[in-house]
Image 1 (cartoon, rainbow, N blue to C red):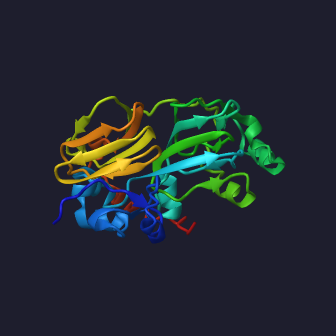
Image 2 (image 1 turned 180 degrees about the vertical axis):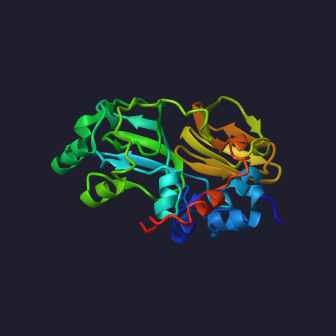
Image 3 (image 1 turned 135 degrees about the vertical axis):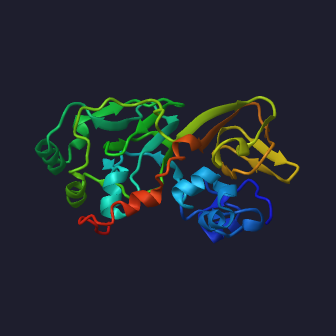
Length: 310
């Protein structure tokens, strides 16, 4: 089997032909370079299993993509949304829940994020606010700054305000409900966290995602194989080159995303500009090594009478 290499992504086959690479990683992402060009990330994971994802990650997630990466830019205040926890999502939608991490890439002077409630709320109070279109008036309004991290646990309502650009790292789940819309509000009401909420500015230790910033001033060599999972690298600032004696160099510009498979060794990352900063994301294998897996979670809910499609 051919050796893996840094994977660039694209949203469509047309984008691959145009060499228009994506800074998004989802179930629908296509590989845009090398001999896997045109295959989906899922197809590559099915073929290369632990060599791509990492053995512990592959076993725990049963070959599923464990997390998504999205770049979100907002020039207006978004809707108030919420996602369930794993337990609620499996029981209703046969899906994972969705914890989120926001890394702030850009923020204007009047930028804002709305996270959780300023005080304990009752379901009736929230319902009345929804009818008036005024939920945000009772939410914490944060003033994000570049480089900050916000951890948004499942069941926490949130809205991305105007003037913000964030990189979102989240569980691989499509279950997000807009609670400013009456039907989705009713669907979400029994799992929304109605308690007073204090925004969280760091990733909790029990979270399996690791995210750190790398500042490059000289070539840096590291091996994804020494970690427990594949690595996502996002270029925050500058230009870099990724090279090895096992593959052709890959050039990355600002806001580029590349996936480094788990079995890669001695990868050299070389700065190509005076200011270079990267965001590195991977998973903690020790939190995925229990006997419980995603499949166990799903099978445990098979008898739930509340199963229905989203």
